[in-house]
Image 1: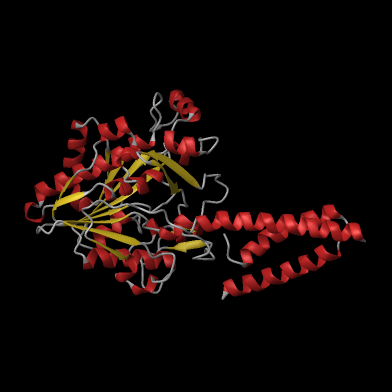
Image 2 (image 1 turned 90 degrees about the horizontal axis):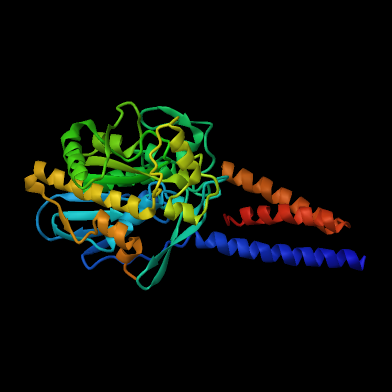
Length: 374
Length: 48
């Protein structure tokens, strides 16, 4: 009898301890890391200021404003649509912490799908956090999920009927922000966030908008600039500029019948010129093997090296160097700079001029951490 | 609505497992129940 009580007490204490440890670990996922904007920051609002329907939810997120005070156009830079794509979020953080705008305005949203930062993709084994060494120590960043946290939006339907196209996709995609545009005010949380972003683009009269992504090396849409068909000239101009900097990007037209994506719906439902960029991230691919922080940051995978060498698949993977975070962030930043340069040629009356961003060679030479404040 | 039904079912199952846990005489079985309870309780508390 005594032995039975003893085992009950011991197991209860051990279980409670494990529960508290797990609760603390889960809790940390809900606390966004502090960002340190550059002196160019002129304002900070919340996405819910553009649509009240997401106020007080995990879908609400910070919107950083950089206004040069000189009349010009407005650019929107979005990271963290899919928060498991580290270079997407990190590129916007590097820009946010260094940016100086000398003409027009820039709006930055680093955590576009804020809810997705609070969970991880099940069965994928992704690390919860990664650390970047900086001048003053290390900064820790969250590696989240591709989709909205199921605690915020549940259950998924068996088949997701995209609004308003009625295009049918896997039920899981109902929580994918980049299938939810243009969204709706009375829809799911993901649709409400998408609707809020469309409202922001309209109210702020955004001229050009960027959505940063990463994808698996074996996916065809990788190392690309995806553009809306109305703005092909701007994309091509930027791709030539990037070639001059020895960076190869493939141009991809946004498919007209693939709905819900930023490069399609931002172009169809707003006056903004949308671009989506993808870098190659081996930690996201099916062949990746052990998934750890080293793979996320160093981007080196023997499996992808072997796969590339077989020649059986088109694989966007550099055998010698892998796809390190510096390379991926550098590509995103250079892509934005060149697209803005190209945009400025076509819209001289709505110039957006930005300065003080590190270029690709500088990031590759010094590392991402060198360009993070604090 | 589905959320509340889910939570009610979860709370009921958790209650039943706790009762069984307290009645159980074999520590190995108690350990197995504790592993289940840990996840259920975290889920009821919306910690995920």
